[in-house]
Length: 409
Ligand code: KG4
Ligand code: ZN
Image (cartoon, rainbow, N blue to C red; front, side, top):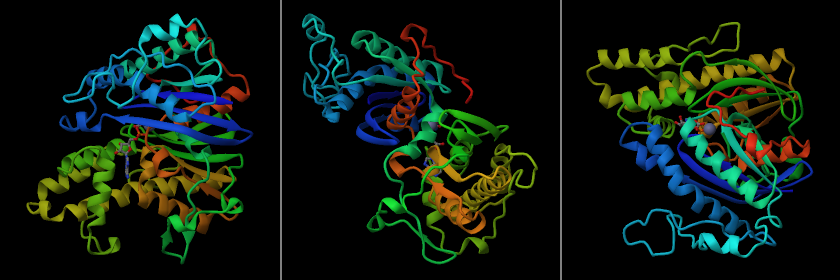
C-alpha cells in the first residue's frame, strides 16, 4: 500500500511517500521544507508567518515528494505555479526547484490523476498551530477528492511514535558500561534490529508535548503522564534564548554542552531535577528554566561559562526524562521502550536512555528513530497512516477537521 503523508502542524512543510508491506515501512520519498531561517529572527515560531509559508510551500513540496517517489504510474502534477518567485529563480520552477504542470492540464486530461500511484493520503490533523494544520488538511482533502482516494487523519504525536516503525533503527552498541557508540559502520543486520513488542512504553518529547504513553497495540494508547507546563523541547528553546544561543534551542544547547572541557560530574553549576521523585508520571520544566534564569542573573561572568550552563541544563532534562521512563517501564512491565519526538535527536538522551534500559530493564528492547525522522517530517505521518489504513480507519474527506488540542487516544 502506497501512502502520501502531509505534515504542516508547526514550522515544517513536509510531504512523503511510503510503501507499507506487512509490518515494514519503506520510505520512497521524504521532503521537508523548513522555516527555521524565517522564524529565527523572532526567537520562535510566529503562527501567522508559519501558515503563510505553508500556503506558499505545500504544493511544491507535495509535487517534489510525488516526483521523487518514482511511482510506477505517477500522478500528473496537479499544481499551479503559485510558489513565490525567489530573486533570480528560474521561471516555471517553484521554491523547491520542481517544475510544475499548468493547473488546467490535469483536469483537461479527464483522467483521475493519482489513482494509479497513491492508495491513501495521511495528514496531520492536530495537535499544533490551527492555521498551519489547516493548510495541510485542506490540501489533503482536495487531493483525496480529486484523486478519489481515502484520507486518514493522524495525530501528530502518533506520527512521532511511528517514526520508530520506519526501516531499521540505528544500532547503539555498548562497548563498556559508560560508553555507547553509534557508528555508521555498525549497521545492524536483521537479527540485531530491536523488535517492537507490545506493551511498549513511549517517551515522546518535542517542542509541543512531553508524554509517557503506554501502547498496547497499533493505535492503542494510554497517556500515563505529561508535562504540566513547558514541553522538554520548549524548555531547551527557552534556555537557549536565555543563553543567547539562538533557535531552535535543542541543537544549540547540545552544541554548547559539547564544548565543555570538564566532565559533567565536575560541573560547578547545579540546577534542580524537577519532579524526578514524584510518584506520578508527569513532568514540569518551566521551573528549571526559571532556575537557570536566576543563576544567570547572579553570575556576572556567565557569558564565559555558557558550555557549563548548557551541559547542566541538558543533563537535568535528560536525567528526569530517563528516570521517569525507567520507572514507568518497570511498573507496567513493558517489552519495549520507545523514544520519539524532536528531542529524541538529542545524543545525550539517546545514549543515556539506551544505556539505562540495557542496565536496568532485563530483556526489554529499546528503539529510537533515525535522526532524520526525529524532528517533524511526513514519512512518520504516512507510516502511522499505513497502520491505520490496515485496519480501515479512514475518514470521509468532507468530515476531516483540524483540532489544535487533539488528544492521543
Ligand atoms: O517534533 P519537533 O520537530 O516539533 C514539534 O512537534 O514541536 O520538535 C522540535 C523540538 C524543538 O523544541 C527543538 O529544540 C527540539 O525539538 N530539538 C532538540 C534537538 N533537536 C531538536 N532538543 C534537544 N536536542 C536536540 N538535538
Ligand atoms: Zn513534532
